[in-house]
Length: 583
Image 1: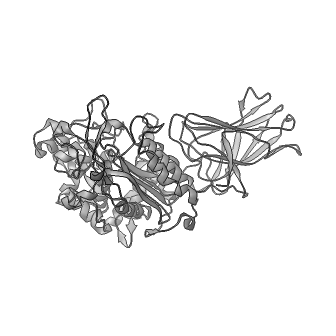
Image 2: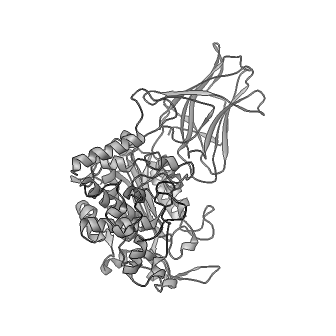
Image 3: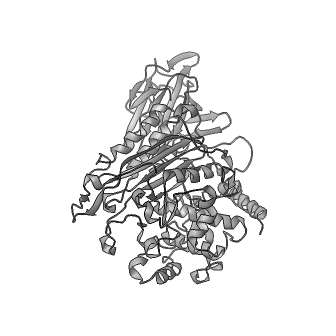
């Protein structure tokens, strides 16, 4: 199949999965699909936040936020979230923040349980993290496997709908397709310890390829994030290209993009720049430094479809910008634009109710508030790595954030670095201003976990039937879990949801029972509601769950008109957890 034919097939798949049924003004809550993404053609350069319309002091806060997690915090007690980190943030092709905190190498071992204290190196032997530190990408390696595979799809050598066994016969399991492995819906288990269960790389790899599916699973019928599926896809790439996976990834991505510090099994000469990971005496490795952390990838020679790559934030920035550009960078085409769009369709939408974390494109994670924070949207994509690495790419804002850390240094049992991931993503998202539609300042709910904030308007007198509330409303919350409510009360004690009609030029219109949650389209909604008789108070509230948030909620230009009499006009609010802001 020629490239052009494959591109048509990919577009057809995307349209079928995600496009609206007609071109009429949309109704219903706002949505966005990969077809709505406006790809740019930026080449990265360094600049100031204000040059690209960001709020400078919020960008400037990123280093201190990252630094705060070098010691235990209220949201990550007992141990630090990581020993060190390198961070890079970019918007519209401009790198607006690039810094490092902490240490790339700090510990030599881990003390006994239950304390599991890190055995620190003498200060003169520690190696500070730098912006050019080389980090173990862990599962972000899966994206390089994915892009390499998608090139083979474009070339007509691989069919996403074909059984994996077409290309790797010993895989068996004829109902499982290449797409099932990319979307983690094959039914394969998440992980098996091949490194300790089999004696040689050859027997380990064969065991991975022939792993049976979980009893009771059906291809496409469940979501289980599986390293094993990506190990198999790495083998598939090798079979199709006729080269080892390291060479295939180099030929497809690393070489064309000029990524000088990205690769498997880094040269020993680069070890002083490499971040250490975990103390692994249980496999006879001691403190892992300069070799891949993942035990299965290590036992397979350091190269596997699910893990093994090392990189820097600068190299990864080029990879991220290539994707934001629709598959091209500095004149080098890595993927067709249509392929990038197809890779960002949520193919697991039908599984979302049973598996809320299942949102996936082809290899890419989608809309994960637990690390993307306020950068999340239905088309925001990225990935994390077990070692503490993260990339978040927001194609609606044309922004990306890279957070590379060694959170497993010295011990994975010190916990996840998700709180730091969310904090940095939230701060960078806040640097993208939400300007009130009439200028000046609007009310914003202050973000916090497990909170309810309220903004209450007390009317000059009780409403008559047919009085009208109008307001401008902007919302972006974690879907289902964080909820905006608009309510009325006659006495300030008992509250009733107020049905709303929302409309935004170019974005459509929809009705709400009085609650809103999820993606708000990143637009201001003109909000209208008819009040019943006897209303004395109108309240906007925002309730969050235990963690993970979107950008939040803004309210402006609140007016209550009662048949020509003004009962409230935007001032005199009682604010509990809300503040005025111009962005």
